[in-house]
Image (cartoon, rainbow, N blue to C red; front, side, top):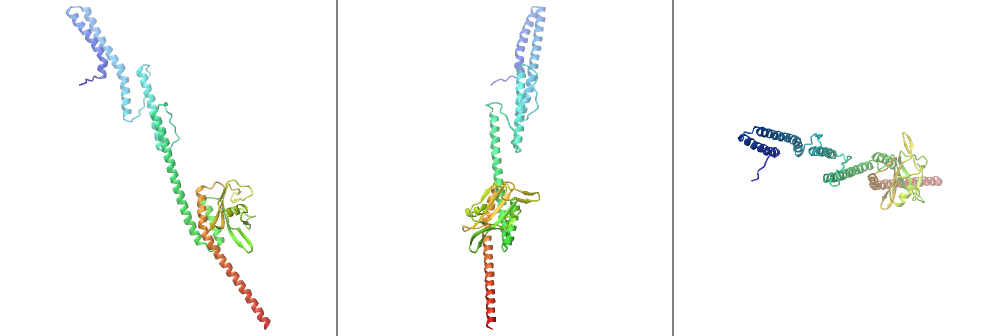
Length: 352
C-alpha cells in the first residue's frame, strides 16, 4: 500500500526533523544541566518551526491561487486572472497561466462568432505546433464550406421555384390573350420585364410577305426607345435580331454601342448594360425573337427562364399565327367573292 503525504507535510518535514534534533539536544542539556545548551536548543526548535511556517506560507498561498484557477479551468470556467509580480518560479508560472487564460478567452470568442455565422474573425496560432489552432482553422474552413453549400442549395431551390411559378404565370397569360397578337406581345413584354426585373423588352414576330423572304417585325415592346425602329423589319442575319433568328441560338451581350437602343424611364433615357435575345423556335422554324435589355447584368437563371419561356411561347405563337392566316384567307376569299359578285352584277346590267 502506497502512503500519500500532504503537500504541507512535505514542506514542513525537513523543519520537523531539524526541530527533533534540537529537541534531542534539549533533552541532553537538561540531563547534563547545561542551561546555555538548553536555551540554544529551545531557540533552534522555535526557529525551525518558524522557518517551516514561513516556507509553508510562501508556497501554499500562490499555489492555492494556481490550484483554484486550474480547478475552474477543468470545469470549463474561464475566470479573470492576473498574475502576481513575484519574480520567482511561481510568478513565472502565474504569468504563463495568465497568458493561457487570455488565449482561452480568444478561443471562446472566436468559437462564439463562428457559432453565429460570422467568419470574419481570425485566430492566430500560438506556434507552429499549436494543435488547437490547427483544429480551429480546419473547423472554420469546414463550417464556411458547409454554409456556402447550404446557401447554394437554398439559392438553387429559390431559382427553381421562381422559374416554375413564372412559367405557370405566363402559361395563364398565353391562354387569356392568345386571340390577339398585338395584345399578347405587349402584355407579354410588360409582364416579362417586371418579372425578371429587367428594364425594357420587345417581341419580334416572323411575318410572311407575298413574294418576299420572311422578316421579323416588332409586334410589342415595353420601355424601348424605338422611334426609328418601331416599324422596321429585320431579315434573317440582319442586326442582332436577325442574327439570333438565323443562328437559332440565344445571344447575351454586356457591351453595347451607344447608338443601339435606349431605355425610357422617368429619369430620362439610358443605354442598357446588357442585352438578351432569345429566338422563339418550333420544329426548327423561327417564329420570333424576344429581346430583353437591362441597366445591370441579367442573372444566369433568368436567362435560362427566358429560354424556357420562349419554348412555351412557340406553341402559342404558332397557334396565333395560324389563326391570323385563317382570318386573312377568309378575308381574302370574301374580298374575291365580293369582287366576283360585283362583276356578275355589272354583266347582268350590261345584258339587260
